[in-house]
Length: 445
Image (cartoon, rainbow, N blue to C red; front, side, top):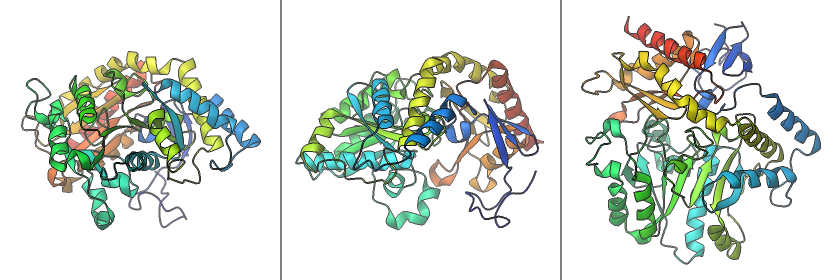
């Protein structure tokens, strides 16, 4: 494998400790490096490449827009791509969520959503409502407010003095709960833990509760028990707390519905999309809000007090519109629902592996939790770096997976995440299961 890493070149890589293959092109669910080696992209990069690689019509839309108008300030002008993208996204968002604020990354959008929640309460005359509640385990991004809301301690440790305090609510994490996600449900899995946290903090101080409707990497695609989100919605309504749905990872069709909240029929007060919203063809995320919130900001400060140079970007919005059009034209969200069983059936060879404690998920989002003991569910000590070694073994087998680490108390915990493109075939699903089994076997021989 060629070595492309610091300090041999000028790129400050995200990792400075290992060699990186140089990828030259992508084709559907596959990546190809400079030596012609092919990798099955079973993670969509970082849960992004939902359309697959090399979709010409999306690339053409970016090119055409860049030739016409690449950038104007979203403070001074509007333009056709943002108007059309917002209209298309609003039509897909649940309930009354129909005002779209486009940004560049999920972290930016989470930051904006939480600021919006705070600004709404201040301009509504409830300045005492300043706290954000969030789940643990959970993850919402790397900007400082988003990181404050995240329960990923190895990311937080260096910056602890810069973070704000965010009260934690136990996440509905059936594999690690005593109730196992079955009735009678524990407080975490039923949603009762949220009400306890709000009452402990004082409802008059709580502005928002943020959650991923389906667990992301931090709980490995853990799906809440039926009724969980409906109870959370009722609790938030009763205590006048805004419900923020972080669908950066689990939204945009990944679960087989456009929004993960659609499975429960719940409408949050704010929803955040990102990652796959433009299929990776341009950096794009969005906060979607209802008019009832936007009207308060319009009458107060005049708008959201959150300036980003590249918000409402013309080329990014053109990419988003092209991606949404492509998804609809090829019925790819419906395809996710129909291909889900194929993916999970293909993971059968992995389920009985001695390193695998659980395989779970929904749609084309799967989590494989790695353990030291299948019966005890005991985690492997973090020092062993099991998820990292498994990810490298998968890469050696020509398979791209996404590792998550350190989500359990004490910093242990290893999960491998799968999020293949929506265009994945049955044969490619079978390859995912086979290559992942090969990778895990390589760690136990």
